[in-house]
Length: 489
Ligand code: SAM
Ligand code: SF4
Image (cartoon, rainbow, N blue to C red; front, side, top):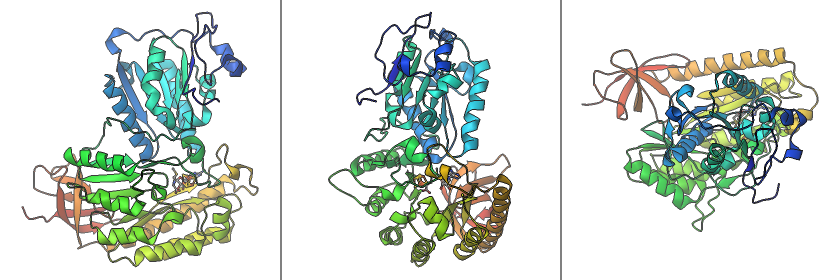
């Protein structure tokens, strides 16, 4: 597609004829026959009824980056005068921010869109955002013709113009360009949590893991300038946020595009030094770019949280090679040794995929033994899911679904044992928590430690949300820690 067509617009007359208008990706000739046939049925975007005009409902699936993208999308629309509502009936615009990392997640999108077919009111705009939008593009119009907007993450900044086009009577709009050096910076972000703020410092991904759709759905890596990041952190601190989480698919591959050329570890330190910021988190780190300078920054600056999420994916060098992860088992274990040698204890969590094509019993055994060696504080575990466009799709020796499930069960059981052991060691120890939840049960609260453990605790104090409290752990399970407020007050 020629650059300069930022988004495609399609305006239809009642008879289904294109009556003009600039056409980007949605040229009539390029539409699938099925889609052409459906135009007449859904032709003519009528205005929403007056009671709901100018309102939007936004639903989000997927990772923290998606959640944060939704916060920014909401900010962009609120800044243009739209009002966010909590149910679809009250909305003139229904936006659905999607995830396509595994097949199940992508399937969910179409079943949800199916629900909208029957509940959609006259004049309502239904929009699909995120990874499924980018991956399926205009195919979404063919499968769900009641959808009128399809927009990938690299085009979110243009959403108000796209919505204005639809409100002006255009039928379908797409924003699917990934050929951009823009990061999605917004003047306003509507954050869901009043104490912990997410902030994306790097968009997209330039790695080429053979199983992963992210490079296709989120486009190439683009880092945000350090001055702009630090300005937003200062604003967040002024608003009362004390914890910030820097986000990126490979957050530690950050490359400051400004003249300051801050490295990732220098950026961490600069963020932690902003007055008012007590905790800085970052996720996800790619093992290849995880250097000693990051551990040294953590040692030197207590505000950088004691936690690293370092996805390994497999404990077998042969599988890692097939996954194109760019490190061997031993190189990964070298990074772990570096983290474990730090002056303060740092917890490590990971992501693991089982049943990658060609994974043998021995390869799987290597993953189990790696778990034993590293003793992760937590692990997200997945069955390999073949994804469109990825190079692993064509690999031979697919593992049957039942075998993947068997391996996943064994892996999860092992991880549960490890976590139960690590959590038990915490009984009797004291931790500082940022309190983020109040339970419905009287006197019960929960919060996070700096090393990313959730502790449920009791306190006789009345108002704790957003406070930092000292808690002593009294009991532990494989997924939970229970404690008591022991702060002086
Ligand atoms: N960028 C991060 C990294 O490099 O580790 C992870 C991004 S991805 C949103 C989160 C996790 O989903 C991956 O670490 C991987 O374990 C899992 N994942 C990605 N593609 C997958 C696939 N095709 N099948 C199963 N799990 C997958
Ligand atoms: Fe996907 Fe690999 Fe990029 Fe992570 S590093 S987003 S797993 S391609």
